[in-house]
Length: 173
Image (cartoon, rainbow, N blue to C red; front, side, top):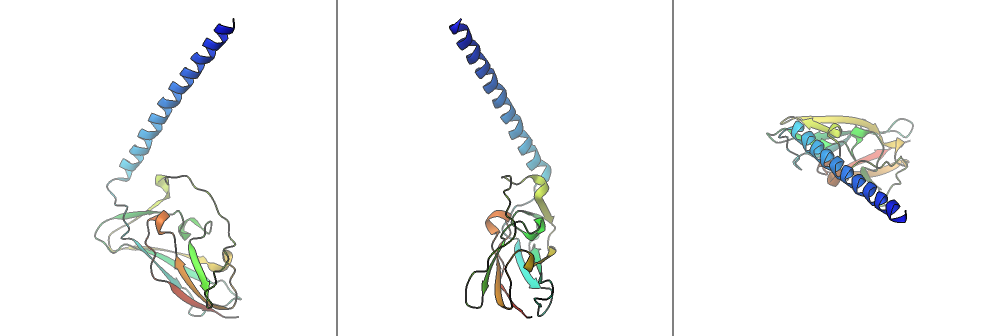
């Protein structure tokens, strides 16, 4: 009886592993099909980010609006994932911010974990010589007070968008 139970358990384990391996192969081909459906779009670091303040002198009394733009200066259609960019909302620390004394500014927004590699629906496509922008409120995710700040995009390794030049803003009362 003991041998029968052990043999049955082994048989069930082998069948379970076989089914699991088949599912993984299927999921792998689905992932490659997704990549094929995206086509021959380049995923290239030629894309770069620019930051600009919407207001010339933002006030602490109002929203501190920043425009984040992804630029495609090439003759190719390129893509980037929205992961770690403001295109997915303020759910990650995609900026490095320092005050005038060089101290880092605290990120106070939410942090989420994401599926890796990024699914196809997280990618934005940018045509040659085009750009795409989104505006966000800096105060919603960072502890901003009156003062001068340097903002630098830092998500290049995740999104595929090169960190552009830093932006310096002065926030008034």
